[in-house]
Image (cartoon, rainbow, N blue to C red; front, side, top):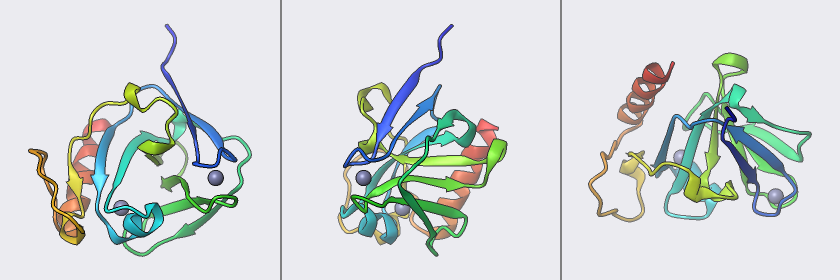
Amino acid sequence: MTMMQHSCQCPCGANQFSAHGKPIVRFFCHCTICQEKYDASFADVTLFKLPAMTLPEQAITFGKYKRFAAIDRGICDACQKPVIAKMGAGEKGYAFISTQNFVSPEALPTSTMHVFYGTRTEDVDDSLPKYHSWLSSQWAFLKLLRSAA
Ligand SMILES: [Zn+2]
Ligand SMILES: [Zn+2]
């Protein structure tokens, strides 16, 4: 049985990497950091376990941002756009990847929720659950991660 492989790259292509198997969840993030880093009203993000990622030598600078304290965001040295964000390390780590960094996003599941909806810059008219606060967004994640463990 071959495991599904998702090819990924940053917008300029300087960083090439891949994710294997099934993602844990895909969601929309309206936090102010995503708004700034993606230059958009929200980010479309897919979450994988870190061991599912293949990250060759990269042109990335990782830096921590305060909103989601545990998340270490990697920004491409060339295009200055998000490449991948990591939470934790090794077997217990997770990887957040912008869906626009997937070469074939149609292979991904649909998004299941909106987080940090309280800081949205525009309303979204859909039936997905919307977690407004930092706390409710964190809880939504913790629940998901526990069920995926
Ligand atoms: Zn780049
Ligand atoms: Zn965000």
